[in-house]
Length: 558
Image 1 (cartoon, rainbow, N blue to C red):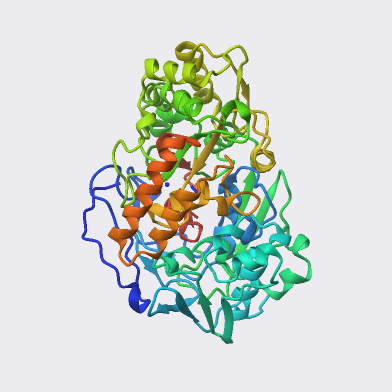
Image 2: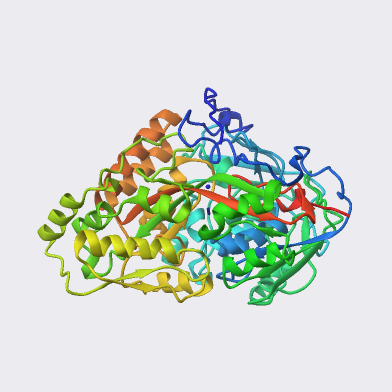
């Protein structure tokens, strides 16, 4: 999913004892939403920094906007932003992340230890329960991971388990479970990876690694609308597509971040504009992403209830590499070079987007300014590349984006620039809601460049590469919607995963990025800021490094 202040602390790593993994911060640039966490650049309602312990902390309910999630509310099958917002309220994973970019043991794990970065022992805290009262045990994690990784279950997050020993055998049908998982006792399980990976403690904070209760396996389909998690809120109603779901505070929650409000309701909106209007009228309390056209007026209208957050997200224009018309890298390079990103940012986003020049965001260590050669605006070079590729300009290019997400204006601006700079007409394909848009992509349904946004799943450069560009991440197990493959890039990423130091790892990741940038399966468009608003009904609204409101901290004003 889904991504600040200048911080230049010296990186450190203590992962050899499984204690804390320090995720490095790069000095300067856009800074800290990634590794240092999402810092609010303007006042957050009430201005409190006491993690939700202010007034109203014992009661009240609030409402929040979401778009329609793609899939049922199952952690291992929820890799998109809207469902992830709900999962974040209902589940707590093994670890959390501090605003300084460190893995914190604020979740279910007591420790995650390894002597060789390949064989890990995970010890759980005692006393955690699911919302149905059943205990969270080592088996809860092992069963969930086996289910998510099994291709027969077609879970979108399955590729995140790919580093665990036995994953490939499971994909090939030669096994029914991951050989690298073993339950030692109720509170201990071991994980053997196929190769060393020092970032493993950071990865397991991602939703695909959340535990599942026994009730899930009795009826997974029904569970998706009546989810039972272990998080600060529990479901008080079933999820209804097009409407939403109501949650109440889980009073037996074992974590440190107990919900401050008595309850909350996620309300599904077909578009951001309607949600924003409802926030103006006081009908929905939190709108985490407002439409581009209201950015200028929202700050003055909402005052301290307006939040601007620089996040880890990169906005991309993806290419269907499976389509013969876009299979030549020169065509993709040309389209990228024909787009004036700065002009679009200023005209559409009031300057709150920064032209992307890399496949790795500036907020993580490993970013290199200007590493994407074909992100440079150069109309002459773009036309030369199209001519060399023999591209047929007589047919319009279809531009795909999901409806209701505030993408119409900037995608139309892209189309206008393609018309002006390359002589190519365009057709906007923006009629599908988010729940329909991603499944179309999984089925190779995009017939032209498509809008894609990506926030890291854990704070590391590698999280911008493997999920989007590795052949191990092809749908339905991953998010490689361009269906791009480069065996050499995959091998370099694998070498980075096994590297003995972070500096060495980043060197391999950057070599892989260079190959990806040459092939241009996605054109990086913008490094992103998001603008959020909330009503006077709530306080302590903070956007985290995954660009989600921290639901447990929200307080309701009485």
